[in-house]
Amino acid sequence: MSRSRSERMLRVDQAGEYGATRIYAGQLAAMGDRAPHSATVRHMAGQEAEHLARFNDLIAERGVRPTALQPFWNVAGFALGAATALISPEAAMACTAAVEEEIDRHYTEQLDQLGDDDPELAGMIEKFRADEREHRDTALAAGAERAPGYPLLSGAIRLGCRVAIKLAERI
Image (tube, rainbow, N blue to C red; front, side, top):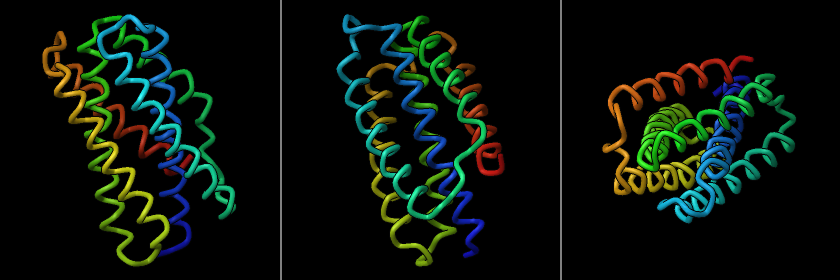
């Protein structure tokens, strides 16, 4: 695999984990500690912060430029998290399920592309993919599919994730 492809993977993965921390921050700001899923969201947010820290370290070690879109992900992620939490606790879980579904797909594609070329990065992605799958399953179990307009909400968020992935790889 080319160095540039590996760098794009790192760039987009770091951006995605940053966006996830911002989504959870927005959800927690809107829900506070009173909502039915606050403890669950805090737990998932903690795992995302760990993922982000690991990708930040690897980006620094390898001298990879982070995405220039980080200020946008800061605002967009927080707004998405807060907006879905304000709709309902189930909508917040629908957001989580949709995002994590796309991240699972994205990480699986990356693992297929990596093969044995970068065992350090592949190991991180495998571990983080397992966490993201757990987040998705937790969100579904917490009522994500009962959110108002679930198919439309989920589809829009998943599309947004796919666009964000493509942009963060390059910009």
